[in-house]
Each structure stands twice: as C-alpha cells, then as structure tokens.
Amino acid sequence: MGELLRAFLPPYRKKTLTGMACKAVEVVFDLITPMIVARMIDSGVANRDLGVVFRLGALLVVLALIGYLFTFVCQRLAATVSQGMGTDIRDALYHHIGELGAADIDRFGTPSLVTRVTNDVNQIQVAIAMGIRMLIRWPFIALGSIVAALLIDARLGLVFLVCTPAIAAVFWVVMGRSIPLFRAIQVKLDTVSRITRETLEGVRVVRAFGREGEEERRFALAARDQTDTAIAVGRLSAVLNPVTFLIMNLGVVAILWTGAYRVDAGSLTQGEVMAFVNYMTQVLVSIGYVANLVVVFTRGSASATRVMEVLKEEPSIADGSLNVSQADINERAVPALSFEDVSFSYGGEGERALSHVSFELPAGSTLGVIGGTGSGKSTLASLAVRLYDPVEGKIAAWGEPLPTYELKSLRSLVSIVPQRASLLSGTVRSNLSWRKPQATDDELWEALSCAQAKDVVSSKEGGLDAPVEAGGTNFSGGQRQRLTIARALVGDPRVVVLDDSASALDYATDARLRKALKDLPNHPAAIIVSQRVAAVMSADQILVLDHGRVAGLGTHDDLLRSCDIYREICLSQLKPEEVGA
Image (tube, rainbow, N blue to C red; front, top):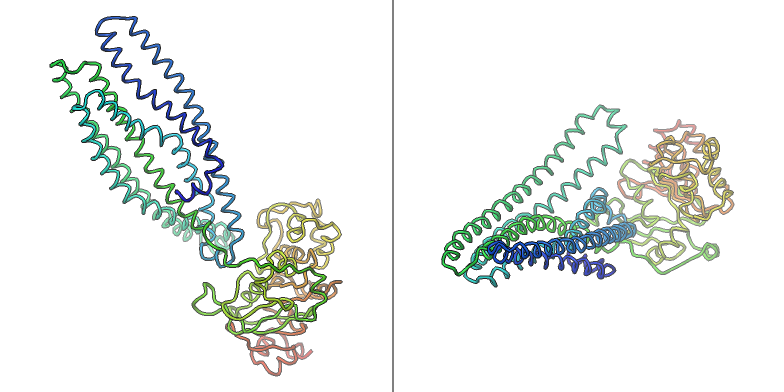
C-alpha cells in the first residue's frame, strides 16, 4: 500500500493533509468534551449553579457545531482524494495493460486484469477515504483518552495501560490470519469473473448444447468457494469486536469499582470519575472503529499488492527506435518479411508451437499457410505482427529485425485480421478507423469494397455511421469478418496477415476477396492463413505446417509432387481434376 501511495498521492498531498488537520481539530474537541462535562458536574451540578451548567452547556454546543463544520470539510476532501486517486490508478492500470504484450496478458489472465481494474481499485479507494476520515480520529481519540485519563489520575489510568496491550494482541492475531485470506478472496473473485465471462461470451453455445445446468453448477462451486473464504474472514472479524469490547468493558467496571472508593475517600471527584468513564467509552468506541479500519486496510493492502504487480510488470514486447515510412521501404530490394529458424512456445517453455520455421515473403507477393489443427498457423500470424517475440531465431521486416521498429511504425506497415472477428461498440466508421483515425470516406469505402463489405454497410441505415453493438452482435459472422478485413486495409499497409479470417465466407466471396487484394493499387504482400486449399493454392508460395514444423514450402504444383501432407489435404477437399487444375 505504501508503494502505491508514494506513486499516486503527491498530487493530492495538500488536500489529504488539510482533511487530516480538520479531523485533528474535531479530535481535540472530542477530547475536551469529557473535561467540560466533569467540570459541569463538579462545579455546576454539585453546587446547584445553573449559570455554570448553562455556560458550559452552551460551550459544548459551540464545540459540536465547529466540530461538525470541520468534519464536513474533511469528508468532502476525503471523497475528492479517494475518487481522484482511484481514477488515476485505474487510468494508469488501463494504460499499462495496453502496453503489455500478449504473453503478459496471457500470464495474468483477462478476468484477473478486469478484477484488478474494477474491484481492487474500489477497495483501494475505500481504504484511502477511510484513512483520511478515520485514521486520525479513532486512533488519536484512543491515545488522547488514555493520556487525558493519566493526567487526571495516574493510578486509575493504569487500567488503560493494562487493557491496551491485551487489545493490541487481539489485533495482531486477527490481522496475521486475515491478510492471507483477503488475498485469497481476490484470487477466487478472479475465478468467479472468469467463469462469468466465459459463460456470457459463449451463452449461445451453452444454450445450443443445453449446458445451462452444468454452467450454473460450475459457477455455484466457484462462488461457494469464494463465499467460504469470505465467511472465514468474517468469523475472524466477528471475533475482533466482541473480544475488544469485553476487555474495555471490564476496564470500565474496574474504573467504577476503584473510583467509588476513591470518591468516598475524597481523592477523586464524581466529575473526574465520569470523565474517566467517558474516556473509557471513547476508547471503547474507537476500538470498534479501529477494528473496522483494520479490515478495510487489510483488504486495501491486498488489493494494492495486486495492482502494483501489474504496474511493475515490464512489457515483454519492448518498443524499438526505428521509424520507417512507406516511401523508405518501397525503395528496399529485400523481402517484406522473413523468418529465420524461428521457434516459439507459449510461456517460453513446454512444447513448442513452432519449431525452426524459415521462409521469405517478397514485397507484393502472397504466402499461403496451411496445415492441420494445432499446427501453429495462428502462432505464425501472431509472430509476424510481433504480438509475441520468438524464443529462438529472427524475424525481420524489410531487412530490419522486428524488435528494432517502433511498434507504432510497425503497426502502420503490417496489419493483421485475427482469426476471431472483433468489433467494438460504436459505429462502422469508428471501427474501420483504428489504423488511420483521419481516414476519408473514400478510403473507408475503398477498403470496404476490397473486403466485399460495401453492400453490407450501404444497406445499413446511416452507412458508415451505422451503429455497431458490443462485439458486433448486430452483424452476422461473415459480415463481421469482412468488416475486420476492411479495417486492416485502411491506411495502405505494406503487409496484410489474414489469420483464417475468411472462414465464414462462401467460396465465391472468398475468391473475390483474394482477387481484390491482388488488384489493390499498392499491392501489399499478404500472408493468408487458411484451412481451405482453395484459399491458398493460387498463392506465390505455400507453407505447409505439421505440428509446428515446416512440412513443405513451394508452389501448389511443387507441393503436390513433393509434400505428402499437402497432397492429402488437397485430395480431402477437392476432386482430383480440381487439384490438378
């Protein structure tokens, strides 16, 4: 928590100190109040002097009003600081997550990151607000009450000194056992979030297969596990208040018992005994609030640790310094993209998704990539646009290693259409303009025309400004794929990677799309990853993958003669005469 505060508190330091100062003034008034009440009893009630009673009563009212004013200022500043810091932390988290590489996101997990940005930051906000409002008030009231009691009578004040270590021991035990459980709660909340996300995203499949009951049971198990841990923490917290109240109430009994003899002996006044009881009551109430603060700060500390884990994570994909324009690369007589003995495994260890892959993609040419399920096709596509870095080998674009490029420059030159079509809520225009926010309508329509999506958008009311729902659910699967292809073409990329992005298109539309790509004025190089032989057989080169290894590389005719796997794939999808044609 301290590290997080050092990073985000400085802009709010003045407001925080002002809020705490206001709360300190209120604490001083609360500590003075028992003294005034004691004097009211000893000087006013004992002597039947109504003037003293009224004057001191009016003083109590004035102190209460002034204290309320300072409390109001403190509450307002606490809300401002906690909400402001929460917003800053959430913005920093979101920005940093955007800079993390795909491997980093995989390691944390999307549901966990969502929980950290939402729930964990909320816990931190609560801890900050309570810290400003209560951290000065209740601990200082407890400490001030003990000091004031000792000043009244040191012997009777020893009761406080006996009770305090006992309560501190209770706090130590409860905190030591609560912190690990609070961290476990947040981890289990990640699991609940993950299951919820999976079920909601796949709700159509769940219903189609009649798996609602199974998913409900899976969610119930995760929720019950999280609930059991929360109940365990609740039981610990439930022990805190009764035990501390018992200790303090025993202290009150001791004060009344001993004070009665002291009053009878004349060494204490009735007002001083009442002041002792009031101070003990203040300590008692303070202990209850401090117990709640312990729970809040423990939970906030666990959340702060999880947030700092993300903020301290160094992106695995480091930005380079090379900024290359399209005009520069047009003059280079080198391959647009090349893989040299590239190997890759997710997480950097375990079975390799790609092993010793090498090929060159000349500028303006097309490379088809085909292979069985799990052969590494999508992994190759992700490496080509540097979503991941290889564990071995070298990937270069226009003769320069990919890590040397500025990511912004590389993204402007190399574009990808992912296997899963992804659209965000907004409009068609806002989704198409990702690569080039200032793209003109003509550029957008040109990209739509090439992607065979012009009729899809023109038939919608509003055209380019037609609404897109979250996930593009108001478009069919094939329409979403065509829109994501159009998005990748906006801004004239020099390399386009199509990762099985036409799987939902019919053969005729797929053929028109590939022809349109070849007919583009700038004629970008293309990597077409597909399960369909028809989609890759006309490519300049075809790369055949088998369990992450290169099984063949060449033209369609070459591979028919030399690659058994490719020939088998062709004959499984096409008639022999179509294969030869």
